[in-house]
Length: 383
Image (cartoon, rainbow, N blue to C red; front, side):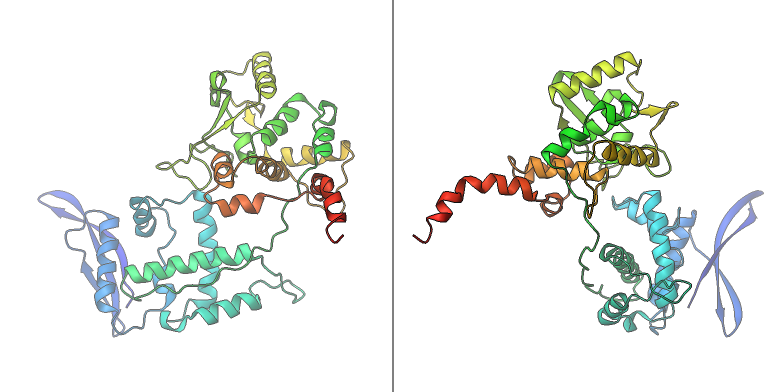
């Protein structure tokens, strides 16, 4: 049974008072009822959910009955996540809502008991979700499919909360199929970081700091002068620039309640370059260090200038994926030479050592150079 919430004003003791009601269809007749003792919309939604728990015993609830109010600002689903310390960013909410629409288009009319792990897995493996105009299929990456399953799992959690289902299926995890960014060799790093390769000093320092601190591009874009602790040679990474241009006060995978702030040591030479740059350009304590017309550098602007610098440095890009994120990959790989994965994960803000290992890339030429001294031993191995 589907319940619809609405609000009505009534006079009570001479005053206009707001009451919450719900209506449902019974034998094709609309029936209205009051939500007792409910003063807010959230309380009324919770009350309706309690009705679902007791009145959905016919097991005829389909998936779209549960998803109707999910991932909506101000809705009980997101309010509950926030109370549990698991709030979502506006970008994640929008993305999840898009996945929700895709899931509803395929499974919306299915009862939960008919949505099995095998059916969902086969559906994603077949991957006929989006077709081009010519009838061909755009295959999705393993990461995309995993995000699809995360939202589907959240729907099942909502179903458990409402008493519609008892268990949450254990969906498999798809292999990451994305083309990982390549790393720079030592020679390429030296060739790349030359001031003449960049159109201005701002861009040169922007990418230099991205590399020497292992930053994400959004983190570098959002750096203020106040984040540089000169007396400790330390950079405090406490936020990033979102897609919409706003700055957070927490890091990736963090939240306002759990910001996941981290600290990175700055090499002396880089620190002095930053201080001199800030002083010459009158960058105040709360100003963005890397800005254009008073605003943080746009991602598209940074991407375009990175490509131009790579070209100017005559770096071979054939059959390679070199992008700004390659600087972070290179940083992690080099830090892993001398530090354990647990320490590097803490420095770069990874939630797990597995992610740090994922970022660590071998460099064939330098790897071969490192083992050349063992040639004599290899030659004598079978003598």
